[in-house]
Length: 346
Image (tube, rainbow, N blue to C red; front, side):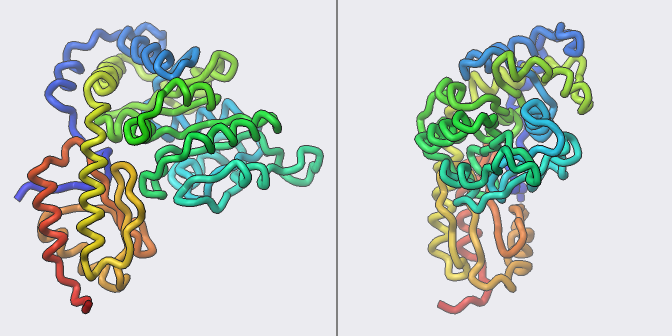
């Protein structure tokens, strides 16, 4: 029985076409900025988002941490949602790498509003509190179940940032999921955000890689910060070639992941053992069991069917669809969900 791994869209393997692109990549030494494939990827993404420059990083966390470092000074503060990846899943890097604290906002499914940003800016002349200098947003939201911001809210947040002289960074780990789901233009994002991190190893299916995008004024020290964080790599053009292939061939297919996640959500809604299913916009389905004490039994029954999903704690379970999740797997998984028995009475 073939394993169905729905823990994350990071579990994918390179497609045949991507492997061919990797094997035939022209490479050089990227620490010297002499890798033609990396240079081509950076130019491609900078142009796609209408920005001056881009820089390839090994991971999304490193790209986000570099962006925070570029925007801030020690003892300052950034504003983000309480579920933000930069706060919850980057090992405390905001404080360790930049000496910056986080003002956590109680948003909606990982999304915050312009009004909330305004309300959480510390008075700049009140020296007892940290100086607010940056706002970090996330699209789509990870802990928020792949939720997508309304672009009009981005515009409002940008206006608040301009009024108060704040930087605006987007953690775009699954940004292409949002672009596909809402039929948005990357250049519109380039007009709103000072910096954008775009992950290539989630829905787009590359082995590694995130690209940080911005204009020259903010990006001038990015390569220095990447060096300090240990992110300088040599013939990384093999991975950059995978990124170029993904951008050329594996973006539009994200709509298929979204459709399957929505169908899984519909099945979950019909099961007596499910308490609630959060709204599904992209490739993430988050749900809660009716009786949290049945969680271990539920996970065990999935394990017996060679199926893996994520347990996010506090009774919160997550399913993520991706390019290695086939239609055959999809049908089998839905059938398994229908036959699970946790002894919940209607």
